[in-house]
Length: 299
Length: 305
Image 1 (cartoon, chains in turn yellow, brown):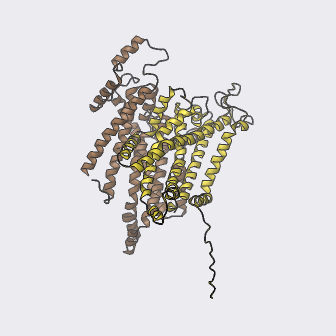
Image 2: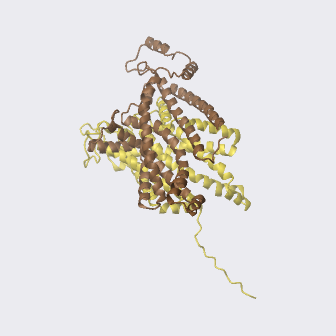
Image 3: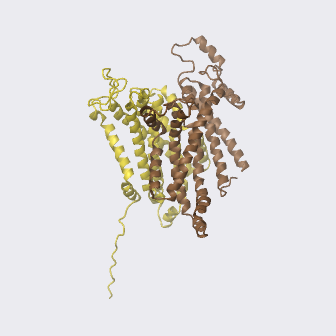
């Protein structure tokens, strides 16, 4: 009897899931990791703000008005004697929560609308998409301004929840369109047919192929939406219809400092740079995520 | 093609109608009215003012009257700009907003397209890295933050440019640059991506193997084909520039249409709010239509029926 030679199976490449692969690719992207690190750093500062600074964002001290940076007030004080550093890190709370919670509203509306449109098709799809068209015809920022003026009169007017709602109610249309498109195109893709032909069951296909593939672009889009929401809040607060005054917001700080641009330019510089850095970080992270989740796009 | 345009215009009219309706409803939900003053007016005065401006009529009748006015080119009378016609107010703001938008658009495309193309033709070279880096930075920093940083640098520190206002060329430089930064970055990114894509196509290899000169290949084959996605994005970009400029107008104290809208909301100046929204929505819709038509003209593969 001839012994059958043993074939050694050598793993050319360790097995990874779609997500495992994506994480590895994301980790290799230096800019994305720098962005992520800055976002995490800022989030920690925002969460532990009371431990970092002894001052509150609303404490006024009329003996120390418009002071320059010093050991006591690291970044100086504003017209009302409020500590700029305290307002900056509490402002990070506002910006980050606006970025995140608006996306929650966006997903709550956009995902079901897009999914129903894509699955149902026909008249429902037509009606939903025509409504989306109308939303697209509105100039975004103006609609947000109009909505937040409407919410001003309600009991949560001027609060951060008002901002979440006003931005979320306008921004969901992008996600709805994206999800609809994803579902429409994924339903007919070759790899889905192939999985079915190889005996994949419905649930397996949904969880293994449809969802991960549809989720990737949604995550990327959300990552790019976050800085836009943050910017919108800053712009609203800058014009004076965002969060109500004592509440800290980078946009409101820019507005406060604006009249003193010649005398105390640093009052503007700090919130402006913080805003720019945060938005840049989210862009880096978004670019990295896009490359990681969609290897086809990589060049 | 003709049928396509007619259908799109009819659809556009419907969309504008719905946009106006939604704006009208939201606007009247905003608490307060146009006659709110520090010192309250007497009820008799308010009654007379309401009668004069037709605000005593039921809301649906006000809306119907407004639409009737629009069909006759009349956008109503402003309550806050001492009885001036809204059409007149918008027309006075339009040249400023349009000048800013168009200059920024030209600047953005003038920078974005050549740099995107150069970056792609010389992929992984220094010019590629520098272009991509600037594109990423300008794509993520909002124009309004850029404006503040520029103001601090050029007005406060160097005293080269005035901070704000309207009238001189120097006053245009910063706002135009701030507006152009984002679309320039987007154009550069898209041009680069589409040029890279076109360069890998079979017909480019064919053109080269026919023995065409490199410059002919670049201009006639690569350039023309890679512009298609750029045009698609340029339309909405122009619309964004003309409409999205209002935060920049605010920052640089430019008396354009964007400021009118914000002032209109603050003063509950209903006809001014409606007029500004209508102007913006109309501009966006028309520019998108123009892009769709241009798209078919540039790319003969696209046909509308």
